[in-house]
Each structure stands twice: as structure tokens, then as C-alpha cells.
Length: 120
Image 1 (cartoon, helix red, strand yellow):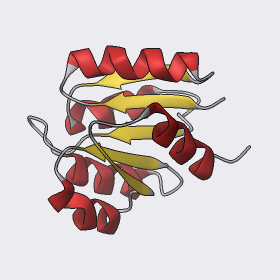
Image 2 (cartoon, rainbow, N blue to C red; image 1 turned 135 degrees about the horizontal axis):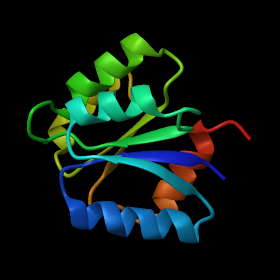
Image 3 (cartoon, rainbow, N blue to C red; image 1 turned 45 degrees about the vertical axis):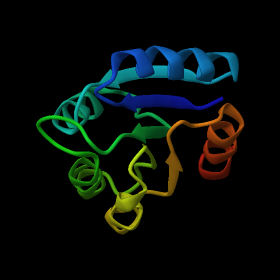
Image 4 (cartoon, one colour; image 1 turned 30 degrees about the vertical axis):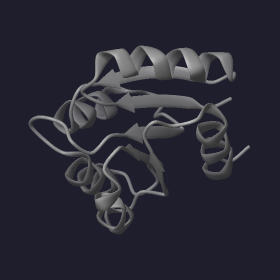
């Protein structure tokens, strides 16, 4: 079971991902609507999430910038990028994301990515 922080500006997607993750045995411990809020939430979370699910296009701060800032603050943070925009894949990976999943995402792909990047 992994603890998860969801970062996406689509509140409906927050609910869908939380339901999928809960069914899969994971626990959502936080939500953020943009990259700047993700940083604020991450700083306050104790313990830190096992994995961060990060969108790209969001108001205030996009996902790649947030990824860079989070990893600068905490190099051990594990970030999975989830975006409908495949053109940002190399930018996300260069920023330090562990993996890139394309929306719409299949549950089994999400679970596989989490299991691949969260130590047992």
C-alpha cells in the first residue's frame, strides 16, 4: 500500500483517482490543485507521501516546475507524471519524474507504475 498525493486542477479527476487508488489498496493523503499548492501541501505532510501523481497543465505553477522545486527541496520525493499532453514527456522526465503516464489512464497502468517506483 502506498500513500499518495494527487496534484491536478481537475477536481473530478481527484475523486476518480482517489476511488481507483483506494480500491487498489492505496491511501490518498493529500490533494493539490496546482504546483504551488502541491509544494505547500507537501511541506506540511508528515509523513511524506510515498508517491506524488503530478499533472502538467495547471494554473499558477505547472507540473514540471513543481516537480523541479519538490525534488530540489526533497530529492527522495517520488513523482509520477500523468498528463494528456505527451509532448511534455521529455520535459517531465528531465525534471525528475520517475515515469510518465498518458491520460486517460488505465487503472492497471497506474498500479503497475506505483508498484514499480515505491519500495515494498
